[in-house]
Image (cartoon, rainbow, N blue to C red):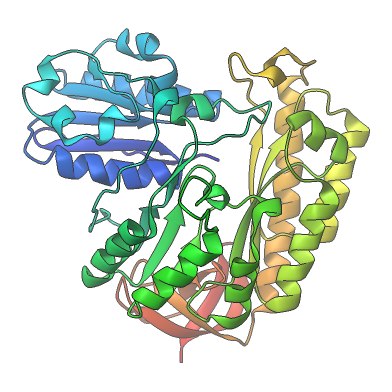
Length: 425
């Protein structure tokens, strides 16, 4: 789903990047930062197309940037720009639109290239994903590594395959090289990311699975202290991943499921590959292996045709599953998707349902945090006062300070609205 790492651009000079959307966009922004390092007075806006709100925020950011720095060259890229380049090119202040393949090419970021107009390649013709060596993630203590790109599935609500193209995998050797470089640069935790990472390997010789990639990374980069996965499809978690959860302490006890709904009828209308029982089985298995595991899920509230009884099915499932980390979004119609032609739920009702699901998630999170009280947690400090545990629980120090980037052993002593309060052991 979508999160925003976009701040207002600085007052002038250099290259500023405003990133909207997923962790893959965060990774790609760092690739572009490296390619564009020699440019001056350029603002890059890396857009997301998952929801209309994500697009609205990006348009707002472009207009704000143009007001604040009218002389800057604004380059718009990302999924929204790939899908509808003309719309973004028409916004005042935009000097260039780059497609998702084009933005990752070094030659797109020469001073000469910035004067040559828009460049948006046919993403559906993409056959492979190039590896990019990124060793710095501005302002972050955990690093992201792209292992996969694109998606071959066609969920009825989703437009992202048309922004990202077909599924294609980064070979093991290139992933290992990237992880090794990040560890050498001082990163203690790496997150493997992509559009549909559980499809990794399907286009590689021998069709390896994601669990095999994780095992190879951990074996070949023994200095890596923590390996984490981004969102996974519940029915595509392979046995290799389960074995790592059971036997490998460096493989973080955390799963984030691309769930979307807790009603079989809605899941079928979404054209998802799992049913509620499949998701429940994954959750039960994860907790049987690692009882303390943190589990999250992406959810869409107010999907077309979701009447009150069907919504209550999702509510009942979530109350039973008690997942502490919910990413909840009101349904947002995407142009030319099948769901956009289905009978819609009123926008106000979508928002109301999203709020209700978030409240269930908040309650589950508080219960989960209380279950960690008294435990010694390995916390990656993101500031001198706070960070996240291996289970991805937010933790802050009751007193004292550490150092951003360190892994501290902290004992959870209390729970507040933001997560756990802890002391250094």
